[in-house]
Image (cartoon, rainbow, N blue to C red; front, side):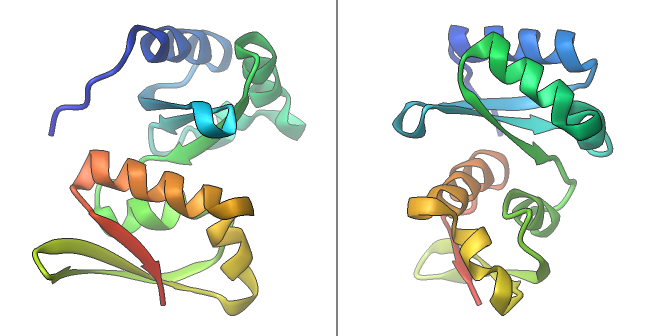
Length: 142
């Protein structure tokens, strides 16, 4: 699947990669919540965060927005689990329902709020990114 990026998203990727010295796979500017989400190459999220969050804080300062980092994954199940972090996701299954591809995430009951996020921010971002990367139409918590 081809992902189209705006000029602003391309510039944000360059900035984040320069500051964190990581590989950014995707960027989504979310004007509704004044944030930028980056999909970071698997294994590099810790480096992008930095010690005590210093690196991501520098990225936020430079871009003037909150930054959300999602670790890339080779499978849709792994990607959905990563996109719902920091919630503990036990399992993700993908099913075809009414001609839609739906991911069902089994989340620890205590982490349901974290998976949904304030005003649904976390799960909505997960839906948008999973749709871009794996053609998943919806994510539901099980």
